[in-house]
Amino acid sequence: MSKSKKKAKNNGFEPNILIFCCNWCSYAGADLAGVSRFQYPPNMRIVRVMCSGRVDPSFVLKALKDGVDGVLITGCHIGDCHYISGNEYAEERFEGLHKILIKQLGINEKRVRLEWVSASEGKRFAELITEFTNDIKELGPLKCL
Image (cartoon, rainbow, N blue to C red; front, top):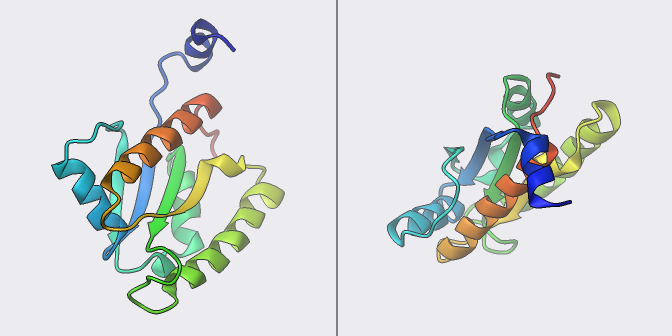
């Protein structure tokens, strides 16, 4: 699809994106992206949680219901969790959430994503935000649940 068609399709749409960041790794990665002045889209809100395993699927569903167009859950890499296996628990919860979103609610799987970002990956954090925002822009606004 050409750039002009994409722009016309989205009509200047700027998505609302919610990011859950674990305190120990991905929030520190977001902070590093900021202090390093890596460029990324500004249309996101970060919710700092102690562990990605703490993100209940109901938080994601409520965010989508309340008008968020995409949700990104970020945490420590597998094996590096400060709570031993919290990120593995997050992965299990995420798989269940995806089944609900896709099979029962018909929401595109690209709207909710789980990624691992360490404290030293500021550049990766910025790239991830840019990629995720572009994916959500292509999908357009989320129709109400």
